[in-house]
Length: 333
Image (cartoon, helix red, strand yellow):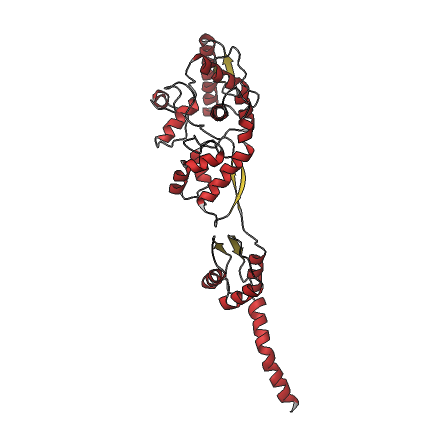
């Protein structure tokens, strides 16, 4: 056999190997970054076909062969692939379960409509409102008697991905509440769920930790003597429940509205919390500072002024109105 013929045969033998190496290690067909969702129950064959169909890889067959050889265990998740990612890069990312997460913050003081807006990428709006009234999720949070999930989510930053089911997302939030918040509601002057409700009212009235026990004390004293709480944020919550989603200060119509969540119209606490309370609001609701105070009003400067009687309260209201008028005049100037 001549040397030339030998080299030709050797080249022919090497070509398939080189072709396979290039298919595995060479640049892939993807022209721009792409995201692929691996849903629960998705098979290797389905993922391989999906990757080829969406232009991430050239050969689904080669991917399937590799996956079976390596006994790939698919981890459900959201995977992001860069432009021109090789088949080896794609396979490696799936093998290492390099899931792309989105951080979503649920802050203290957030109410249902705020939570829905923050989760809209992961929980469709109609599904959200159905799950919001799920008895199963309320039970998972530790309060099976709750008519909604208002207040039953832990304030935190969550790592979510788009392959998660909507109910799974909501369950993550209520389980965090059950583990982190629910135990902190024990041992107060009110039962745990009522403590949570009171804490939510305090949270929406003031963010100042030094004021919160005093605000809680005013409400507790009013509960004790049978006086209506007259909490402005509850009148807003009633407005929103009726579909009027203007997020403005309460109007006279809001305060006068007959609604079971409006504490100007009905006695006692609201049927559910009206927001997610902070840890300091919960502590205030567990141990309200009950004294002579029966009224309070904003100062217009970030805090509140408290009073034991209506005469002093009306004077404080007058001071507040003068301060607001001064601020408006300064703004116009």
